[in-house]
Length: 127
Image (cartoon, helix red, strand yellow):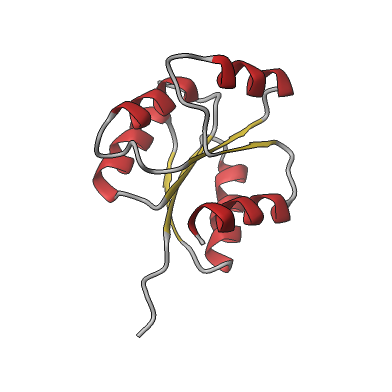
């Protein structure tokens, strides 16, 4: 009997981006769920316990940085690896890695990115 597909939570407010990510990850055998803002993303992370979270940084209601903090500080979600996917510049990667309040994410992709880059990261983190 094969094991259940891994679940990935996509936290992204741009429909084009979450449609692309969702279809691409589903085509590669993952179960996908979507949250369209950070607040909803954190709630879904707690409720659904995904194997991995992709997190956009600039979103309405709650920034990606705050959402990352919430995920990392909650014992129910702290162990879930997070891949930041953002259109913000490379300087942001340096910024997030220097923050004392958040642990650097498990992965970081800058938009636009290659599908292969995303797949390699997802495979490395959750198989």
